[in-house]
Image 1 (cartoon, rainbow, N blue to C red):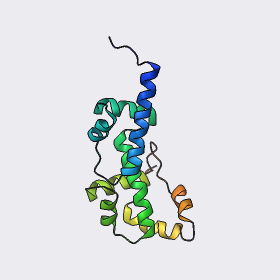
Image 2 (cartoon, rainbow, N blue to C red):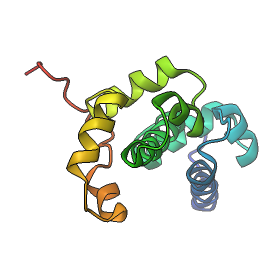
Image 3 (spheres, helix red, strand yellow):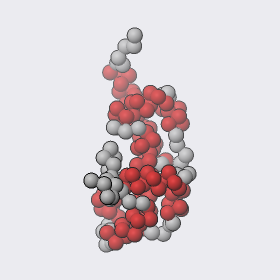
Image 4 (spheres, rainbow, N blue to C red):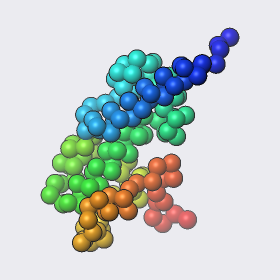
Length: 147
């Protein structure tokens, strides 16, 4: 029978989870996986995934992909890089996976987003554009044509 964690253990886990979250925020463009994040936090991958989901409402991988998509949105609004270049710049190694996740989170493909966002955010400071165009996690974007 397993005892529930002590308050001290819970606080220690939360501090480690915060460090994992901060690492994802800083190193989103680096090759990161749950095993590497767990090793850095001195936790098992399973424990990290369970505790991260409890603390933040999503898995470490989902959080990482959201950060990558947010950065990709900013790069696409600027319009200096191709969609493929943006994909690799934010740390994704597969254009297909990048495009699929982008479309799931944002509601349109990266190329459509580039066209529409350039017009929609023209003249708006980038810090404001980032806030109003932020992807919505856990409430995936509606797919056009579906109810």
